[in-house]
Image 1 (cartoon, rainbow, N blue to C red):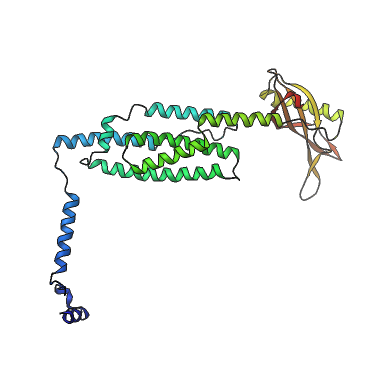
Image 2: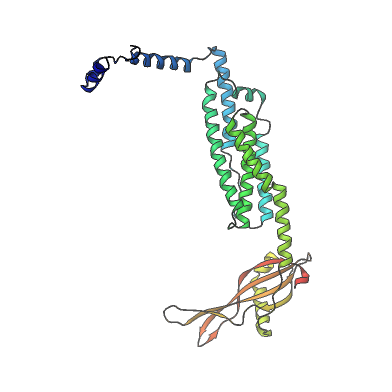
Length: 329
């Protein structure tokens, strides 16, 4: 029989015949079809439900789907352009409070039980989507963790990464409550909780920023003047007052000291002719505001070239101000 079977296969004539096993004489093609049919029937066999139960399943699935959608697609409006870390954190906390107000009380025991109901076929797709979403959130958390641990990342990048993790954790919290039996959600929530335990929550973040700000204020000081030129110091002070830029940010400021930050002007020339176009110079001011705070104002000034080696009036272009201890003036 071995020989007959081999010859039949070799000649390609097995297309219209059943290959018989040499061991037990059973037609394996029929066994395979029977096994496939049995597995399919086993996989699709479910308890029968009434029309009323089906309508109830659909109602609950709709409620669960809406809660999942509102959490999944919620966008926290983080003010990425805010340069003050304290204000950035405060705004992010406000966004978190709005999300909680939207989600609190929406997860009910009835909905939690519905996510565990094996007879609810319409819930299967939602659960699968939740599992995929949890995997994506896990990857997002891992990327933020790399930023938090990256030695080449700036303090601002790390603050933003920490804020994003805290927001993701809040989304996970509601979904882990709703889909209590979802292992993927549970593991991702544990991942975010572990990272927050190490990196800190909003309160820790605010405390860290406050401490870093205090240290920066203590380290900021007015550098000694590179040169002294009373006429140029008066001219810069006049231009600073006329521009009004510093006054708009620090109304009522008082100038305590004026220091020239360079030994001369930085002349910009025409690339083709080499003729001067204008010249710029930095002047540092120590100022005090009515609230008793002191600042280092690093301001830039410009003079347009008039020809013949002459320059026009000094004009204030702008600058930056850093708070400092008054004793550092």
